[in-house]
Every structure is written in structure tokens, then in C-alpha cells.
Amino acid sequence: MKSKILQTIALIGAMGVTACHKDLDRAPTNSNTAAVTYSTIEGYRQVVAKVYASMALAGNNGINVSDLAGIDPGQADFLRLYWNAQELPTEEAMCVWNDPGIPDFHNLNWTSANSLLTALYNRCMFHVSIVNEFLRESTDAKLSERGFSGKDVEEIQLFRAEARFLRAFQYWVLMDLFANPPFVTEEDPVGKFVPKQTNRAALFAFVESELLAVEPLVKAARTNEYARVDRGAVQALLARLYLNAAVYLGEGNAKYGKAVEYAGKVIAGGYALKPVYRELFMADNHIGNTEVILPIAYDGVNTQNNGGTTFIINAAINGDMRPADFGVPGGGWGGNRATRALPELFEDASGATDKRAMFFGDKPEIDDVAEFSEGLRVVKFRNRTTTGETPEAPGGAFCSVDFPLFRLAEQYLIYAEAVKRGGGGSEATALGYLNLLRARAYGDASGNIASYNLDYILSERGRELYWEAFRRTDLIRFGRFTSGEYLWPWKGGVKDGKGAEAFRNIYPIPDTDLTANPSLVQNNGY
Image 1: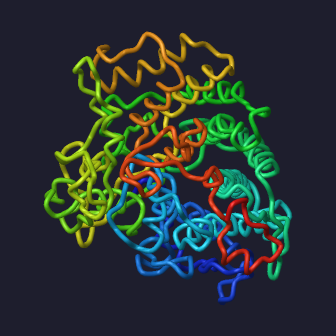
Image 2: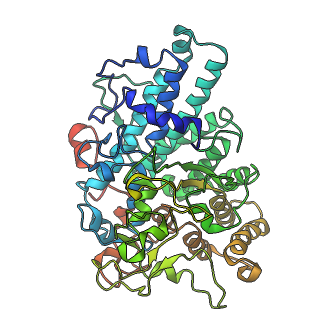
Image 3: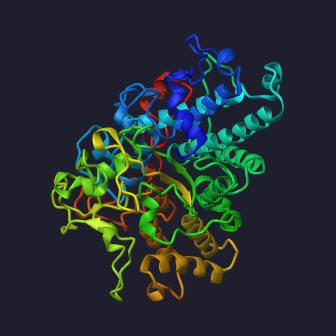
């Protein structure tokens, strides 16, 4: 197993938080009450395991049960929902499936009734609610009342800091995608409480303050168990938050200097690029990985899920591609591939080869959106080990590839972009970071650059981070997501591409939540 916390995930079915409800915080309705669950240190471990597991699983009990109502459990995990919202509206991915909600992403015409956006919004709010429940039950007063002391208290306090980070991450996602969600913390009452709506400025302030507060409370970078939050993860999210501050707060409130500062802290934290790029996305990427700061961990036996990297890998291949070669002998769903614009990012006039370009197929152009063989398949993620083995998985379709939420390469790119946007720092240092990425990509210095601009950064982020759920956020920051001047095939549902309304830089508050909470106001344009 990858972590002691992950070993506990298999036991989370015994816990009291099991379903999503219209009012976001409810007392347990089964016999396993807080008094029982939190009576031992093991109980606290199980609950914090649920906090982590909610990033990796659809629900507590197998692949056919979801924490969320109204969505197929196979589509109900965080990563699958988030990946769709971040990748499918961009040039990096296009899906042949006609499932409800999916074509809306390509066509840039989603509404507040989109079922996948509703599920993502509910997943984020559900995760917030279980963190709130854990924080209510782990205060100093509660621990004293239950007789905890010494090392047990220290361990629970560490769990609290990690849980606060995970809540801040979910609120960052909500701020980035939905801008103005409802807001609830552990200070709010349990039961029929109806949360008030917040806005980006207030949510930015909360996320920033939470991250700064827990930064000294979590373990130092690279000293925690694998797949658990450490100081590097906190600083990495702060760097990402500050890089996008001008989007969230307006151009007059940019924080590029802070982005330089916190990316620099991560870079100084002892991380190092993994020498071979493709090994970042293989089934043994949890072993000796000095680059990944915080992953979502998956295991084809113990954390089965039709989302996560199981979805990313299976949806990118079909039976004609010999699924066993990709570590999924029982899989191959034939859904997602790239538009022509993604492989074009890797074209190099020098003739040198960028090894990050991992595609399958011979027809980059998509003429028929329903034909999976049109458009190059992305085979960056592969459920094989670096020694060529396929991990065990019942049915042969579930994957054990961990997904990197944060890795060092992103911090290099944040530093370089923030420097170029006027955040201070050193342009020579930034250029050195970019050339470290280039040298790994090309295997030598043949792809190195002598200077760079912001257009280069956007393209390099596409080459380095494609299919890692960054692209929508990146295009918005560069003013190109809805723009009619930056087009890609099938943008807006038109083969040659077209622009969309600027309000689509923010997703709508779901209809279901507007009905459940009449105090909420819909985002502009919807």
C-alpha cells in the first residue's frame, strides 16, 4: 500500500458520512454516531481517511455506490468531473460520447442544468462538508472531553491542518470554476442551516488565510507519508492562487510577486524533476518520485473507481489499440482524443523530437466528431510499470496510476510566467527552469531556448501539463478561452472554431442549488 492513510480507505464504509443532501451539514443518521466514531485515535484516522478518499472515490462501498445523488457512480468522482470541466472545453481534448452534458463542453453552450457541472459542484461542496464535520469533532475542547493526550493529540492536530488544506483546495476549485458558491465552515451549525453565497474576493481571502495558517502546521516538504499534504503542497497551491489573482480579483489586484515568492519556496523544498517524463504517469509513479508534490492516489484493487486515472486511460484508447499494451486488458472505452491544435504545439522547426508528445493515430484532423479514430489519441497516462508489468486489477480495467495534483514542473512554469508578468524574481533563473524542462523533454540541450515571452509560456504549459486539468484555467488567465481570436477545431461547436460569450469564463451555479437555496444569485449570463 502507498500510505498508512490509504490503508484505512478500505475501512471507511463504517463511517457516518455517506450521502449528499441539500442542506450541506447533517448529523449522522445511523447508529455509528460521533460519540462512537471519535472515541479512539483509530476513529479519527478513519475519518481523515474519508477526507482523503473523497478525492479518489465516488463513494464508500465499491464502484456502484456514490456519495452524490442524481449522477451515475461511474462519473461521480472528483477527478473525472474536474478533468471534464477543465479539458473538454479546450483544444486539448474532445469526446465522441454523446452522454448528457458532454457535448456542451466542446460547444461552449452549457447551461445551469448541465448534469456534470452540477455533480462537480456538489462533489466539491460534499468534500467541504466532511472536512467541516471532522474539524468540529477535533477541536481542543473535544479532544480534552474525550480524554486524548500526548502523541494522539499531536496526530489529530496534524490531521486537522491537512484537512483544512483539502477544504481550501476545494474552495479554490469552486472559486476558479463557479466564482460565487455558497460558503460554510465548521463554525456554522449542523442541520437545517442554509449557507449564504460568497464571492471571489471573499473566497480568495479565506483560501489564502487558511493556507497561510496551516503552512507552519503541516509537515515540512517531502517529510510526510506519500499522498498526504505537506508544506510543499500548501506553498504550491498558494503559488497557483497568486498566479491567478488578477482573474479572481481584477487586474489591479495582481499578486505576481507572491507567485514568484511561493513558487520559489516550493522549488527550494528539495524536489527534483523525474529524469524521464513518461514515468510520471505510469503505474509505479509512487515509487521514488521526487517531482510530484501531492497526488491523488489510486489502486486497481483497493480503490476501484470508474473515474480517476482509470477514466483518463480507458477513455483514451479502444479495442483496436490493444488495451493490454496500456495496462488495461479488460478496458478501452474509446472516448477522448485531442484536437489537431494539441499535437501542433509540439511541432519543432529544428526537427528535434519533444518526447513529451505521446500520441497514437495518424489523422490529427477531426472531421466527424463522433469518430474516435479521428484526432490523435493521447497515451500520456499508461497503467504499466516502468519494468513493463501490469498491476493487478479485477476485470483488468482499473488503474493504479496516481494523478499529480501538484508537481515541481508547474512551479517552474509559475515562476517563469510571474517573472515575465512583472512579479520580480530573476529572468535568468526563470530561463534556467524552462530549459530544465526542455532538456528533459529533448534528452539534451537541443531544445533549449535563449529567451521567452508570455505566448511561449502558454504553449510550454500545454506541452508540459496537457491532460493534467490545467488548460481551461490557463486559457482564461491568458484571455483566450472564449476569445474569437484564439481558435481551435470545434471550439464553440464549429469545425473551424468560433468565439463564445465572455461570461462563459465562469460556470453557472446549478439550478438544483438555486432551487434548494433561494438566497443564491445566478452568475451573470446564465
